[in-house]
Image (tube, rainbow, N blue to C red):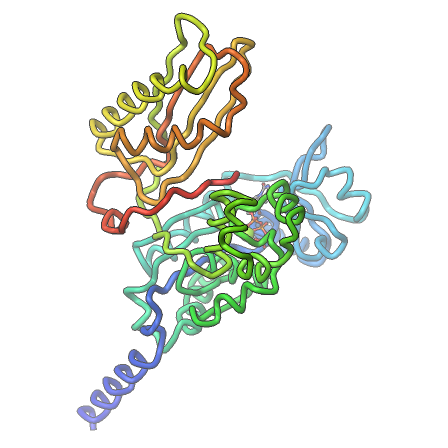
Length: 383
Ligand code: TTP
Ligand code: MG
């Protein structure tokens, strides 16, 4: 009897493996806690659950850090001035943020995710990606994996998390936001483009308010519009950013879940003996700074995924431009090429007194998986 039970379980498991998430090229999970600061306050004081709750400072020009979903019905949202929020919702209760407590719960949340997969990339205090490709086969399908993650987070923190699963980071992130709060959205890769199509361009990763204005100005309002645009036209109209957005609109995003990212940078800058004017005069300084940064990266066993150029004008105005490489580097030539690509983005009419190059978003050189990926064109990181 025992024997047959085991045999049946094995067979069932094999069938589920064959028919479940295994057919996805990757299984990427994005998890984002719901109304995080507010949810923690409600956890510690359940009497707040039913009232509109704003977290933030009330003094002076305080802004709303976040609010619960009761308050969101009044049109209140993160980053709104507190005075505006209270005008929209005068009966709201306001609590000051307690960062140490949020950090404590965040640590528990991240550990739950890490227990599912060590390939984890925390993005903020309440948000992380995991690459679950290696564990997906342990579940009947992606929905069951997502459900297991939600249950584990709830067991450990007594809070709800919204979870998105797809075959790329971008689509997983959009998916986790799709059905908030307490959402679980699975987007199989073959449905990803159709899932994105009706969404506004503001859902494109990296499209802030100014970029959205630019996209609207050239007639692009939905992700479907971006997907259908002529590739030549979009490159001319929007440059590299256009190509980047079109790849996202086609649900093409092979960025790995970067486990080794650390918030540190290595930079080299020099105040010049004499002020200089124009791109040609700047170039030799980019060369020497890139060399210096590459040497220091190699010495510290790090590679930079981000490259930033800093210029200070003779009138002491500091300007910076940055981009993200698709592959981290410690190669002077790659750093220099990135710095040179950034240079046309500066206004170079004024004399300059300082030139700097910085590698940021550093990753340890430890044979991380993404190093095996082929080199691709750099994509602009839009703040
Ligand atoms: P979010 O995940 O953006 O927001 P949220 O968790 O409050 O709500 P949602 O359900 O939509 O995910 O940010 C996480 C926390 O970061 C949030 O609880 C408070 C803080 N935060 C700020 O302090 N200022 C901000 O402008 C934003 C967006 C968030
Ligand atoms: Mg959140």
